[in-house]
Image (cartoon, rainbow, N blue to C red; front, side, top):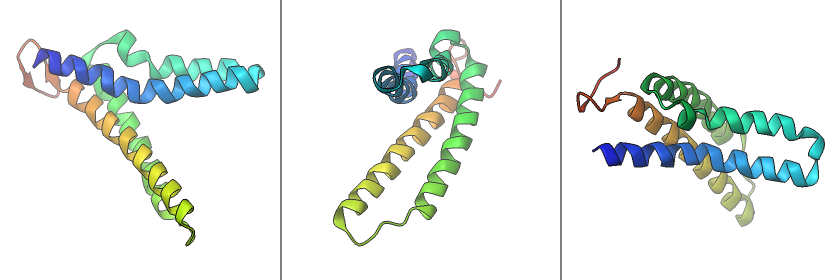
Length: 124
């Protein structure tokens, strides 16, 4: 169980760090004057791996799940694709990516409620 939780920590953090790292790399190449903003976002999103505390995972997961759920709902009901087939595929791809981010934030909550010492799930 301990290795499973460790694997979940890295996978759920990677769902946040990889897009932020990609955005940081894109900013460095095409508009280097805004690299500080993306670097700060990258550091904030990598904080769960740096801090490595249960309550931090729990609070980060709750905050990220609320934000990602709102973004998913707004994206799902605001963007209505046209009848062109490519617009449907891009719509579903975007919805799938937002749902992956939502599920990884729920995984952060799952990690935050697990106590390694007691080997069970508890809130605090």
